[in-house]
Length: 369
Image 1 (cartoon, rainbow, N blue to C red):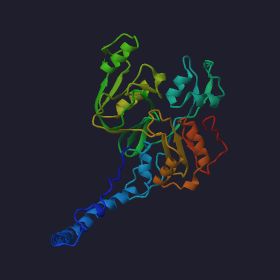
Image 2: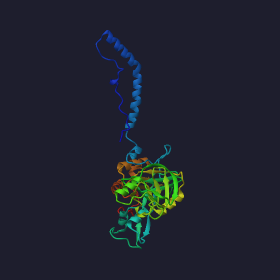
Image 3: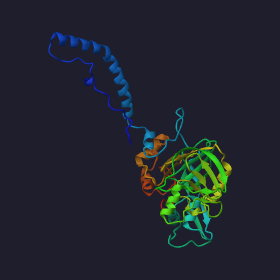
Image 4: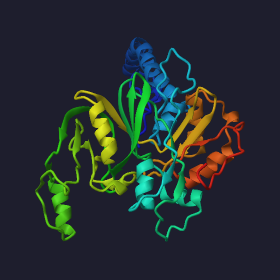
């Protein structure tokens, strides 16, 4: 990473405007006098110039505040205006937890994809054997909570490590959906975007890069796929201003909540149909890369979530979390740092309450409680 500190300014000793020592002669005396005159004229300007260089450099070299620390690991400040003190977040957590009755054809992968939770947590929380198929009619307890990232007033926020899409209206969370994002070798880009089109039953024009992948893998090389059950875009397409990126459905719902796509945002067919009806052309959004999320709700409860650093852009450390706490106005002594360390090791994508004064009566870390 390139340093933000300017190059070191030249020293005064190197200046050609300073007097030159030498033998006392008529020529040497004139030369020395001339140099003294030049120095008298230019020395104040030189000093002023150095002040202009050195003072900003010193300011840049001071220990960074929380915002730069967060950005070093792909984090993001809470975005609180300068004239307002950071405080509780209205929508701190979205909870998709439910009792799920296993239907014929369900798998751990399809259930995890539907709720936005890892299969490992479903297995641990229900005492299952991951090697055995699920029995229809079995009731599973699915715990699926996520910390809501810094919101937009109106629009879409997609957090790649979290594999979640959040839709905001009036600064409040309107809906949230699990998504599949780009593979580690085909990452989804981050940045601001606008919705540029909405289409149903879109023909998939296969990018040349994907055609090349098909060829390498020995698959039939397709140039177009018409609407229908074989079209990987599903029935709904929301085109974004980011190059070749869109939000779309899928014919493989169990692939959602993973790093599985060629860069697009893949959504469960039911969820993308709902989102499609709620967004309009021109709506803005943001794709971010935030493996760690920390928030305090209006009820005072503190929530933390750690996700995998799939793109290896910076996983974050306890110091990152401390910077996040300072940025959000959360007292560090109110956080259970031992639990934070455990969650940083696990990175299972589940939001948990981490306040030291939390109610621990129903806490089940291994089971996702």
